[in-house]
Structure formats: C-alpha cells, structure tokens
Length: 104
Image 1 (cartoon, rainbow, N blue to C red):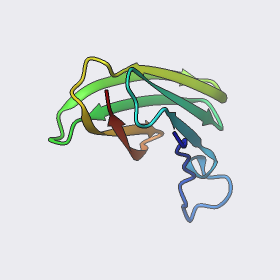
Image 2 (cartoon, rainbow, N blue to C red):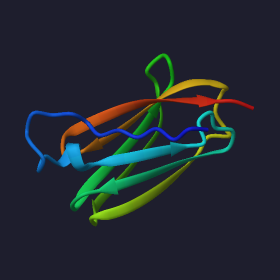
Image 3 (cartoon, one colour):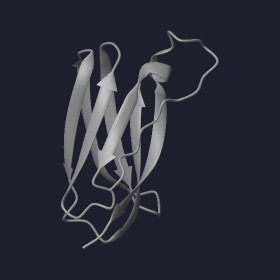
Image 4 (cartoon, rainbow, N blue to C red):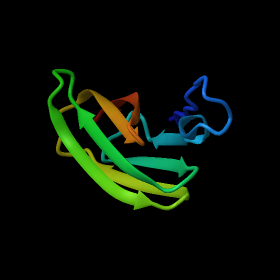
C-alpha cells in the first residue's frame, strides 16, 4: 500500500510546472475505489484516464481550471475485471503514467 509519488525531472528549471507537481495513488492494489491525491502548483485543467492492458479506455474524467493546491479524485474500480491498468494524468499538455493493480 505504498503511495506512488512523482516529480518529473525536466530541464526547464525549478519553475517548470511538472517539476513542482506531485501525486499519490492509494490503495494500490485497489479493490473498490482508487484515490488520487494531487498537488497542483498553479491553476490547471486535470484530465485523468484509465486504460486496460489492451489500451481500451475504461475511465476518463476532466476537471477544468482546478485551483492551486491539493486536489482529490475518487475513481470507482469495483466494476472492472481484475488485472493491471494504466493511469494517465494529463496537465498542461504533459502527462505521467502509473500502473494500477485491481484485486478482489
């Protein structure tokens, strides 16, 4: 149940948006609801997708103009097949991808 955090390493310097963005996923593996906690360093639209191993989109959500600060998103996973999924978070035309494991 270790949360996953990411600070993308870019060459744009300390003021680059993605170098200041961070997130946690929990629980992972997930049984019912996947919780995503994100720190947005400035106002940003947030687009989250989950795809299965074959690349089929099974979930998408878009939130426009979220304020700077902590933002939470809950994604119900109980209706999906057990297995591994790709979570993609897109912000300001850049994205990060994490693996999410669904168990029963």
